[in-house]
Image (cartoon, one colour):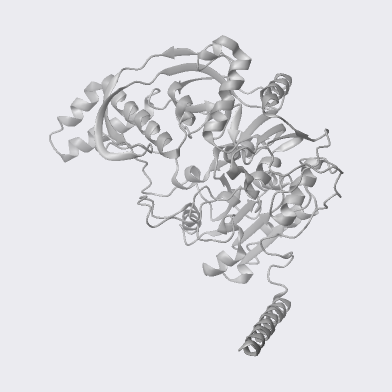
Length: 561
């Protein structure tokens, strides 16, 4: 695909970055404006850099990039820390992140591209007790500066109007990640001349006369929800009792063309149950069936030549073979009335089922046949979203993790015996290394964690696009601008709105043209700091206006004394 003028300009900035000593390049643009196309082009032709590394926060976004030709797109964690290693330490498995290294060797000149950058975590609560020493953005900066002799460019690509970092308590006025703000980099010590910003052009996801595109732009104009126009061509109002039937109708035409988006995990779990009941009838009582669509919820690098990334969709193409797990007595934290783990321990009997299934990854390209792979799945992970709070979900996940560890020991008693009978530190270390290797080779311990993939949260959907989207606004937090905008812009052709909080328009609204302004800067940055003097003048004028108003108020107060 040939690049347009703005994409070409962005590519030229990359080409000239070393000679102009540019260290940070920020590329923004509305959903569908060609950001992924630009990344795919730079992946093929990244001159003058020796190596290009492409990463994103979620596995879903990395999967989208891979399907667009960026074959080695990864999650940020796997790029920076490499493949997770597991160590024995008081029967707890921990990620080995002592050394930051990527899967691929670095060159003397490296281009690091981070997609869906609005979501990159840029803050860490110092009181959270979390043992991470740095958040993702700090880790990205440290990784880029790992080898002082290298010449590197950090390129951040994102839509400032989409969902921001998935954390609460951020002390910033804006919702998007700080990596998209030039001010952040200046405060980090970068020079103005080392930073470039470019906003890409119009969306190509929807047709230019699409009311979906018009609605999203009217949202952006006010940074708020806008009234939709139900034209019955691209935007439809849908009642609750129609949702499942509409989904099934579209799904049967093309199973990869439609998704239901909701705000909470519990809501999408309920939708998934209703959809499976409609599709499979009485057989839906079986948690896994042939033709089921699943969503991978944890990165998995166990299977040779096939990585399964968090957010990737897979389809079961053979009959699942269920294998009952051992019933094991676990010692786990007691849970309080709010579903939170306490410091008190209790013993429970717990078991997990496995399924051996043949699967293929989702592909919208009818000419490309994806390979069939036989894998193991942890069946009980399908029940995680049914728990209403994050605390309750975490407790259930921890029970599964604890059971996986203990089950490994039940199946490998000799390994544990050798470790316990180690005569000295050297022998103990050797046994621990052997145990670590067994962890990494064990197909049960490395089985996939999955949810059903018919309905998903918008946080999981970011970075993807589907022909038809049904967006559920029934939860009050779904009225947030960023969530609504991200949900709306996942749709290519048809958007169904349920319980949208603003009444529809009676008449077709005026077409909202593309704005080349980035709303969080309030102006177009053709040259990032080109209008410095005029900015200063405007600031002085604003200050003078405030002084005049205060003087007037003081004068009025004096009169009343």
